[in-house]
Structure formats: structure tokens, C-alpha cells
Amino acid sequence: MKSQISIEFITGVAIMLFIFALTLFSYSGYTEEDITISEQMQQICYTVSSYVDSAVIGRGNFFLNGTLPYKAAGKDYFVVIENDSFVTVNTKTMIFACSINTQNITSVYMDGGDFSMANLNNTIYVSRLVSYKTEYAPGEEITVEGGYFLTNVTLDIRLKQGPSLAGYPKEKTLSEMEFSETFNINQKGTYEIIAYDSKYKDLNAKREILII
Image (tube, rainbow, N blue to C red; front, top):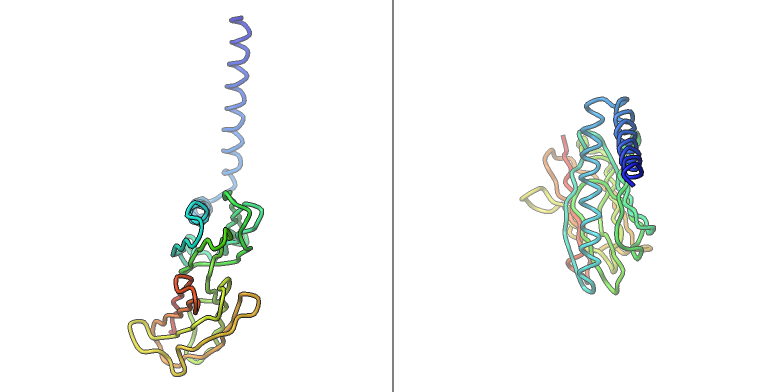
């Protein structure tokens, strides 16, 4: 009996050492910057998954607003929430995945910025705004895309803590839960782009862009 326990113990230790060695090997090719990016990707992934799980627990008519950093250790990234119970964070050179406790969620692509999460009729919706960049030159064409709103959307573009641009706010009609808007800003400064669902006011998203 003691011999059997000893063998099982040694086998267990050997497996743990193998996993430890494999972990060291997997990180050996990474630079310190890579490890920092990986850690921030994990944090982003776990943040999104916790929001989804909270929305699941909250059940009907649950709304929650969140914010993601615009970059992961200085790198652009995007988040994908798939309906197969996974969240992935991708910098195009690295990818990190974590699980969520639901399959009843619309597939979502998003990057840094504000977003809203809602549980309506036991389906999780993540409303967000996406822009190709966060910094633009005066007069440069700017396109934003919004997704996973449920009715029409009221869109406002304004100088941060200042007035709205001419013609805003205005209502946008959705096409398959999405909309896009292209515009130009000639004056330098920090601007807010705000979109909120015309019926479900808690479904909203916001982005900041710099005109430099």
C-alpha cells in the first residue's frame, strides 16, 4: 500500500513538474513586453466575461455599463464574444480566451471604449461604438459604427464638455441592429460620440476621439 501511494505521489509530482516546465517553455520565447500585453489581455477578457455573467444572473431587464481600455499595453486589440461560450481578446499577434456562462448572446465585435450590456428576454445584448482610430487630423473623414441596439438610435457628437456639432443630436435608423455614421471635424480638441437606444435609454455607448 505504501509503495502504491509512493508511486502515485511521485507520478503526481512528475506531472506537476512537467506542467511547470511546459509553462516556462511557453513563456521563454516572450519578451517582457509580450508578457505585459498578455496580462492586460487576460484582464480585459475576464472583465468582459464577468459583465456577461452578471447580465445572466441579473435576468430580465438588466442593464450594465462598462468601459474597456483603448489599448492593451499600447497595442490595438479587439474583443469577440461568440455564442459558443467564449470571449477572445486579439491583438493580431496574440490571442487570449476565457469562458462565459451562457450561449444565449448575440455575437459581438468590439474594441476599447464604453459599452452597455443588457439582458432582455433572456438574451444578452452588448451595445457598442467602434471607430477605426482614436486620433484624426482636422478635416479627416471619420466613420463610427454602432451595433446591437434594439430600436432607432439617437447619435450625438460634441466637443467634450462643450456644444454638439451642427446637425446633432440626430436619429439613426438601424439595419440589422447596426448603424454607421461618417463625418468631419475641422477644429482640434477632444470629442465625445454618444449613441443611445431611442427606447431603451440604458442601451448606450460612448467613444472619445482626438482631433490633433
